Image (cartoon, rainbow, N blue to C red; front, side):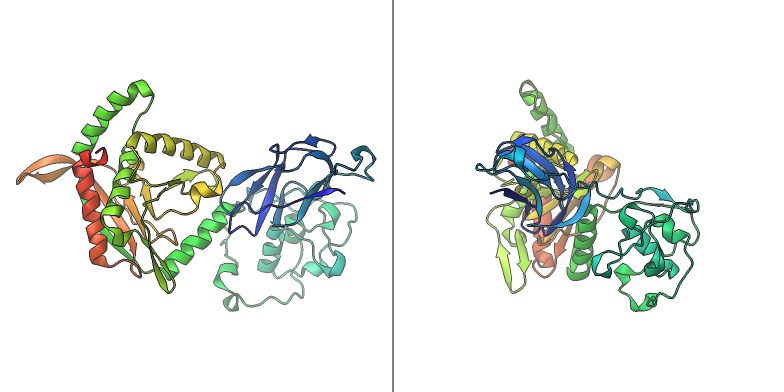
Amino acid sequence: MPIEIKMPALSPTMEEGTLAKWLVKVGDTVSSGDIMAEIETDKATMEFEAVDEGVITSITVAEGSEGVKVGTVIATIAGEDEDASAAPAAKAAAPAPKAESVAETKPSAAPPASAPVKPAMASGDRIVASPLAKRIAEQKGVDLKSVKGSGPNGRIVKADVEGAQPGSASVAPVASAPAASAPVPDFGIPYEAEKLNNVRKTIARRLTEAKQTIPHIYLTVDVRLDALLKLRGELNKALEPDGVKLSVNDLLIKALGKALLRVPKCNVSFAGDELRKYSRADVSVAVAAPSGLITPIILDAASKGVAQISTEMKALADKAREGKLMPHEYQGGTASLSNLGMFGIKQFEAVINPPQAMIMAVGAGEKRPYIVEDALAVATVMSATGSFDHRAIDGADGAQLMQAFKDLVEAPLGLVA
């Protein structure tokens, strides 16, 4: 019997994904562990490995296909008792319709003249049109049922609806539609429309949810960095033969991890009718990747040495930028750290990453007038702002965490003890 290869659930929350790229073709022999495809989830682009071995007899979902439900058969492999060479009509899936450019400039040229095309009606009277064409049709009031598509298999594309006249389509008033789906006017300004990837869609959804449902409270402290910078220089000199170079961020990860254990009332999350109190501090660290923001996790940050944190963080950041993080490397965490100091940002307030209940936002260290031992001096000072979920963490407890973080940074020997 042939073996069905199904769309995998590459994370606990994954319901569908994009089959970004096939790395095998019909007729190829695969073994367990071979990379068969790249699949874009709501968090990252991940490699899909073969579990069984055999010859690929068909590929039923073309690369580039979006919204492929978990469990959908995407390919088949000849079973042990099956002759792959005799498999009937083993064919690859037809190429997916070419996606419209993600950088289409408005206004665009009129649609070119073409030969008669098939109407864009599929089985069940379903209109086959690209998402961009549907959006433009909605804005212009064009009835897609009256439009003939010039794309593959009669698919309606952007050029088809831009040249169409408004018809009798019943378009609901914008005011009655949900705000998220309401068309956005362009006011005649030239622009480029870039399609959102799955990661960016998830960021938009989760951050909107966080700001709408979580009562944020913000607490800011100024932290003197001179002692930490001195210790970092000494540690880097000692670790140079080992090829380890600590960043300030590595030390701040350690400081936040230890602060969470010193103030356990902040190492929590709000879960409806219960408060979850964590006995381990797992620090999620914001990393800017090409596909969008992602937060790989340093597990048990309070207990690890700063050299180990540095090594792990470099490896995780590289994987994040390449879209190769595994689910267990970015899902979870008990609190987050976001550092924009390298961009010269002085101070900012970060959005909580649910279901966590706090995130620490740190800015740049800069020379400022500062009271040192009752005398005015110039010191290197960094502003740190904690965002706290007020359902789970009281202001006084949040203030204790900020004080513990400040103490650890200003007396940094506690980070290496």
